[in-house]
Length: 207
Image (tube, rainbow, N blue to C red; front, side, top):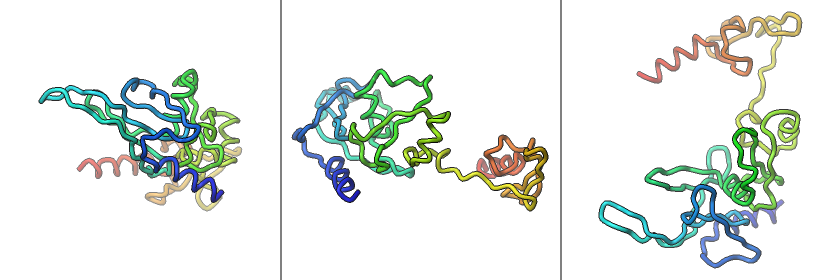
């Protein structure tokens, strides 16, 4: 595991323009001729000319720096037509080398086989359904720890914080007001704050 960690840092922190051993580059989907990504998890801005208010400007070729997001994954900022986007490097690598897998209707997610969120080598990336049995297996294996749903710990219901009839929660305690609230006054089962408290918080936030 220590060697994998060192390998991870070596690749994504290496900003030399020299192609590394075994490294292959392809265009990032929807950014053809602008950005490329390698099978070792590096992202490059290609040399090009862009139009500005003061005329054309030359953009030099360079390896982009990567930053860790709150969920632990490495991200990189890409710009197109004046719009900047922070993109997960794992998705850029996997889908750019496997464009046939890029289909929003499939509801799938890229995960790290060795569970190291920063190791974005193509050989370390897998593709899995976000819902269903295969997704639950991935949670157990720790492959999708960056997803909020995978990190969510369901509330344990008991006679102290809920009323259960026929194996269904009818009433449960709101974690905000700490009152026993009917289940129908929650937006869904996974939410532990009642709708009234959520509404009050939203009004306070907008003030």
